[in-house]
Length: 319
Length: 280
Image 1 (cartoon, rainbow over the protein chains, first blue to last red):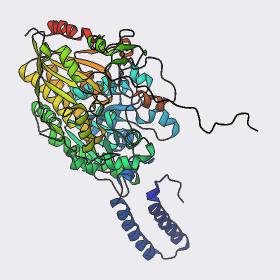
Image 2 (image 1 turned 90 degrees about the vertical axis):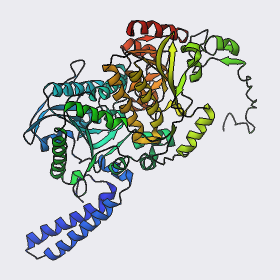
Image 3 (image 1 turned 180 degrees about the vertical axis):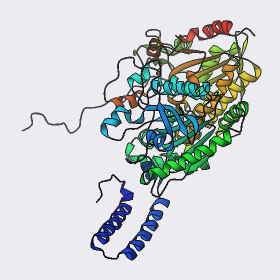
Image 4 (image 1 turned 90 degrees about the horizontal axis):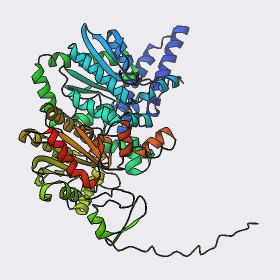
């Protein structure tokens, strides 16, 4: 078996991929003609992949959003932009490494890009605090948003967080205040904001940088009021009921599209963004460019009015 | 051989003696037993330890507003079930149970009122209604209360009491944080005062949106305040939390609260503040 980390439902695909690649190696080494077999196996692989990916449960999709190989914010920035120059610190307390951002160039267009950053290996995970920002992270983000406004740069937000960090320091330094202020102030930023949920969009931790003129989700990302585990722990009193909670919360990109919360879904390549990160980045980049060019046709007043109305109408009730 | 053997019958238990409802009240904090009628006069504040009991929203209406009168708006708004949410109970059944328990259609009561003659847009959350949780109706009623403050050009007063966003409405609940905060941005630009009054408890989605966005934020003593609940924090960091962590006193000390106000002083304090902030 390959040593690449995989999810349980990916196993048949990985196994078949391995078989095909073995066959290729073998046919190259022995100069035996196996191309017929390889082609038929590849067909089988495509069919299998389609079968598995079109029938994913909500919980499986949540797992895909957390795939250990999934591209993170800095990966997308590296693959999509040039001349990225990272900016650090909130100028009050510290530099939160779970929140990254800076100037970047997207197809010749200068932007400000901000997002949560997860770590790949154990050491990085700890440094990045698993993508869970403290108040200083949210304040850093707002500082960068203000910079963007000052220099008239559109803002691109990439969301990938299991939540804002619930800890002693976070409470002491006003996690709730930092998030509330960001949400309010993002509504009045006089530059276009494009938000993409690239992985996990958990609750206030996501929304704290998540107000946008256009909000998009990658196909296998999720966005909800609470994580399935958190919801299960509260309502079922058992975090192991997360799969049930995921079904109930309806947090997938398809769900949010149906609920009218997001503007579009960015499709992912093959078996998810991790199977072809470059292609995923290309798709995200194109979606952002398209959104930005639409938004730049609007005057600032129109933009802000539209942003307010977009969120003002959200909610379902009987009257 | 065991020295002791468990007795088969076990120790005899007596039925817990019930104190007749409303006659005597035991303080949750210090255990002091107070005569019920006296508690009413004390506004449900323990005379021994100043613990503020959680009281229904109607009692705040009585003690804060002129003649205890609120011209209520949007009473016809009730929750839908957009996600068809079901855990151990169906969401509509939870709503029904909460309506029966509280006699209210939803978790917030809002309208127009006067405080010492000053006209205000007023909203108050009711913890008895699914933990004061914020779903689409709560968000909408708060949003409309903010809009009334903007349209009528009157100060906004919100009394919060909530465990956070309502899980049963998923992403729609989360977005109520955005909706309410968006309108507060407009209120802010119009320079209309907003006083946020926090009562026990105010946490999570409500604390991370409108409750934290007041020009003045005040809390009753010893209220539980914060972003994350204490249990979640304890589980995350794997250690006990310091004494008094996430109390009103803690937040005042850390600089996130303007003042702690005893219940009996709330009306006076709000009036005093409005005299400085509102002269139109």
